[in-house]
Structures are given as C-alpha cells and as structure tokens.
Image 1 (cartoon, rainbow, N blue to C red):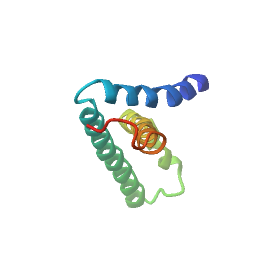
Image 2 (tube, rainbow, N blue to C red; image 1 turned 30 degrees about the vertical axis):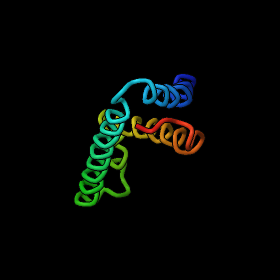
Image 3 (tube, rainbow, N blue to C red; image 1 turned 120 degrees about the vertical axis):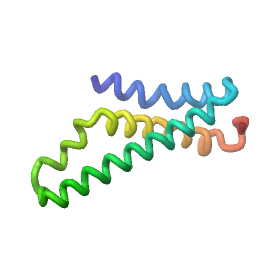
Image 4 (cartoon, rainbow, N blue to C red; image 1 turned 135 degrees about the vertical axis):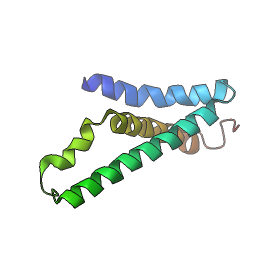
Length: 100
C-alpha cells in the first residue's frame, strides 16, 4: 500500500504538468478542482473543530473522526497532488513551461 501512495505522489503531479501543457483548458479544470477541494477540506475541518469544542471533547478520540470522512480525505489528497504539481511548474520549470 505504501508503494502505491509513493508512486502516486511521484507520478501524478508530473502527469498533471504534462496534461496542463498538452490539453487546452486543463489548467482551468485543475485550478477549479483545487479551489473546490480547498473549500470542502477547510469546511469539513472547521465544522469538525467546532463540534469538538462545543462538545468539549478536545482530548478525546473524537478529534480523529475527521479521518473517516471520505470527502475530507479525497479533497486533502487532491490538494497535496495539486500543490506538488504547482511546485514543479513554478519551481523546477519556472519560465520554461508555456503559461495558458
């Protein structure tokens, strides 16, 4: 399982860089998906923290229930891959990749 995670973390951002440069409109779709993921991720985290504070279960295992939410996990995973892709574009290939 860890091999699959590491493989995904290494390969997918490079595929996203390739896609953004080969497919017209792909950058917009990637950016829009990242925006939606950030809204979902932040909202779920904020609601969960609010519930924990209201219920006064700060030191209980309720804190970890957020990791059972598939939307939280998928949106967080997408944000990680998107951030790596942006680092590749803006860092490694800064000035060498076509901007659309």
